[in-house]
Length: 514
Image (tube, rainbow, N blue to C red):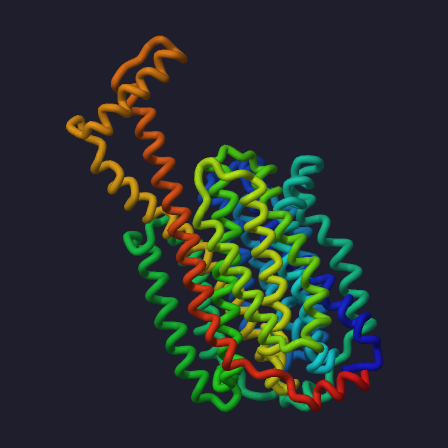
């Protein structure tokens, strides 16, 4: 790609990528402070998160085409500049509408960083060293969602919420300087005719379809899904737009997103496996804190401690796996990783209201180890058959599906949680009637407990105690159902590993020369 050392190139592209990934979740824990400072309601405040996710998701599938049109180095630097400037404007906002607008700009700037950085890494390293390259990239992908909430909470508590945005400015300036000095567009990108006819239909449909889909997934459960006319209309718009996009782009000679990459069985299979694993990962990252806070009485800090060791486990195992994939069959490592993640969610099925914190942490650590063994070989295998000329397009596809998988996972798991809790509540309530001996015994026991504590025992008070226990058990079983579904999903995609192709032996020889 250039005469610059590949490790310097890796540092140059990973720094802004890590910054963008952290910013995806850094606002979450500061939302209440932002809402109070800007005198906004909770629903309005959540758009500060949704606006970023939507604009981020929209720009990702356009990055390959934009890089070819404007020059990838120029586009990457412009994206970092936009991200940095909009970060300053976000911190300087004095109204919620202004903050939402600048978060949209920040998402547009940040959306290009992941796929372009991944493409540059894959071009800088030979195919046999894709594992090492993706281990470095994966550290940012996995580390960002974990450190983001912790960093955001610490900055908000010790300084003030604008500093979660201001802290991006010096890092953004350093990133621009590194990119200007060390990154160079490869020759094959220069040969692309930038005067090609702009695919206005493709741009319009992908922006409309992905944007509407992201809003549906983010707001669906809160709006009661298709009982809301707003969500129903957006779902229809998204479905029609995305189907039309696929049909139109497959017919174009120069599509904005080349979907013909899916003809490659290895690439297609890798995308499906990736979708399932990130579906489960992001779903579990939401479920576990809810489980320990709502049922176990953990504080937000303790809930963070439950998640953190899993992230540390991923950071430890990724560099090791990055070296292993050049010596061990990456498909074997991938199989072991998927099995480990599936086993971790299986252990969660056996949680109860008295489960020890160490058992919860161990399940999360297992998932962290498994994800480290999944991400590195899966990414290396996904791009092992992709030509370098198509790498930017392929990484755009891979990135957008990873983001959508996370959104689907969160939306699906929270919906399962709510609906299954209602189901179990209705089923358990069937036994709460005055003619049931077990219920009568429960009322007497509850009255005795109340009498010991307050000396004012009554049947309504006993019923309140029993109902509280019923709700706890209903929610517990709903969590267990969600963990069960996650396990089944992972087991179902494991056979697709057989369709993945290893890098050719010639690539290994080339790697040895590097």
